[in-house]
Image 1 (cartoon, rainbow, N blue to C red):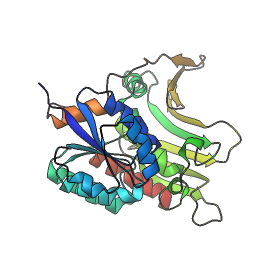
Image 2: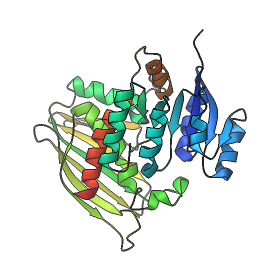
Image 3: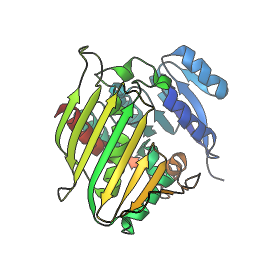
Image 4: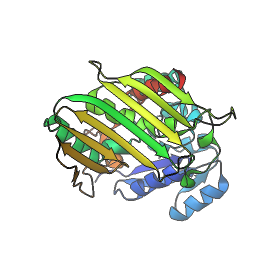
Length: 317
């Protein structure tokens, strides 16, 4: 009989709630502990997992030797210190993105994680999606020909979004849509085409020095000089819209709003590509496989560090 993996969660915000459902839905994982400094939010989560132990101090939770995997979903500036404590306690870790709040912090996390030999995974949902798989298959099959250009456009009605209202996510120190949204697409491009190099980035900020960006445009390049353009803005009078478009010399692929894949060939009409409802890959299942040393596909801290390098270059060029 396979052993049940006891999981502890540090941080029970909006994103954490989604991952909680994945843990509860997997036959090998049991959510044994929840930790958050917000006692009201912690009590709400506890109703969904009444058998879980509750903590407001994560160090006390880490003393529980029966917990084998910790999901870390606190604001980014706390990732490094808490992740290091998790790894030093001998527990495997699943960390939210971005990996850290600086290149130096992410490198320190990467080096320690690799030294321990523990599983160190990151929550990049697109890596496990059928949308990514379909795009990868069509690119590799040559359906758009030779890649010539990538354009990423992201426009937000407001930031923070209505379901995401909290102080840190609107702060210049650790919030903003560059930190929150672009890592997903940086990682996706890295996995499909290799690492990005930032050539120039122009970030627009409001007068309030504490508030995050309101817009940016950046030019990056893939190996061989293939241009990658990122463009984003908030406070726009339209429904939120995200689009990553791959331009080839024989066609284009557009990933719209995370889930719609649109293919064009030459001057033919655009075609919506059918995407199966459920991916064969599952983040929690892959983490458990990795812990079992039986394979397991995870985006690890090395990948997270490479994303962090690009992210900080976008913000600081």
